[in-house]
Image 1: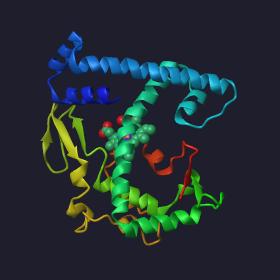
Image 2 (image 1 turned 45 degrees about the horizontal axis):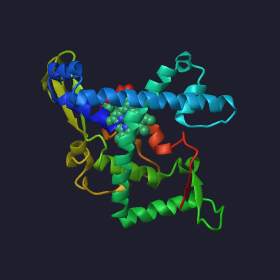
Image 3 (image 1 turned 180 degrees about the vertical axis):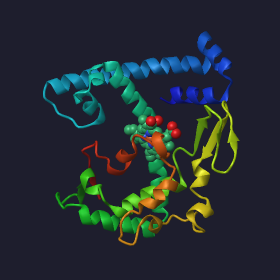
Image 4 (image 1 turned 90 degrees about the vertical axis):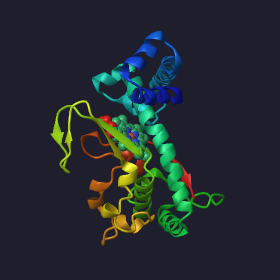
Length: 256
Ligand code: HEM
């Protein structure tokens, strides 16, 4: 995955004729990309075969791969479609979750006030099951936890795993600020900067402050979501966004 992502990143930074030539010659990063592609396809192909076999034997699992395989949709009967869908999600969700979690843990641990609020909230939903383990809760219990949700939003605002996003221009248009964009131009959006701008988030924009997300009824206030770009907004919004908050595809148990 790392080799593939590196080669794809470089494709954005060099002229197309150059990387196409490297690809044709099968050298350098393009060679690594081809090898990585074969490796991931073979790996996920094998996972699909094994999962189909275990589902046939009646072993039921609720992860994303099993959901695709169990789907009645015609395209999900095709292993290549399922494989490509899973590779797509792996590519989109692997480093983003890892980086998002690291920043989240860093911000929470250096803000004891926030850590205490999250723990307090978790204790309300956690069940005492095993005396050796203090508390247990599952992903369903996490739905609707206001402080946890607000702290995830706040850390993704300050430290977005995708700090830059670029869009190409297909036809001439005028942006809301009056700038004219022409076909072939690239627009680079800095989610990192947007999340810190005082005129958007207020004078306290650099503070890790959960309260900005919580409305007067104690619920997550959704009006801020229109300026929250960590998952992009509009038709190309992150496909995995809901998974991040609810973790609903995994039947995990967590201990506190
Ligand atoms: C904290 C974690 C994540 C962040 C910050 C994040 C962020 C984003 C952003 C900004 C985009 C838009 C990219 C663009 O402009 O084209 C995007 C797209 C996407 N994300 Fe995520 N993502 C995360 C996790 C995930 C996960 C876990 C999955 C899958 C299980 C996922 C699947 C996708 C897919 C498939 C797209 C492309 C959607 C489309 O273009 O229609 N993401 N994500």
